[in-house]
Image 1: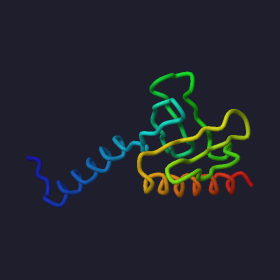
Image 2: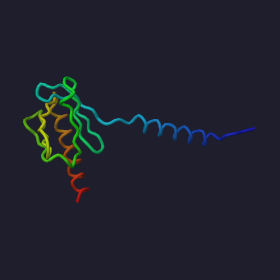
Image 3: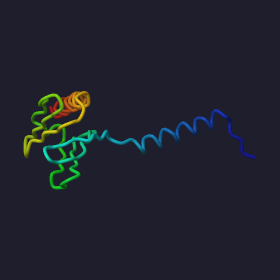
Image 4: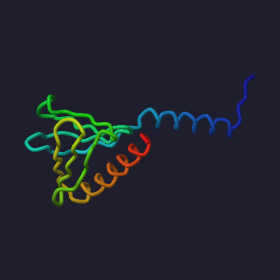
Length: 117
């Protein structure tokens, strides 16, 4: 006969929960506009991605180390300019969200540049 302790059951359940959480972890996604483009801005681990929902040809990905400048333009707008390619202006509905994303992306850009050194 096989017996298992309550502690062992709890440990197995905790391990399964941790694995499930890791598998369902997703990158933050934010609704934005880029001029006349409606889309989603995704803060991935190694890159910033814009997925246009109105024209797939306008979708772009940039490694954080490939972003030359990233700045605030107005209260609810952020501008990203890569070393190569077009700049993108992202408009948000909420100023606090724009501020939070600016801070997070700026930190990731600095970290990526330091990793390259």
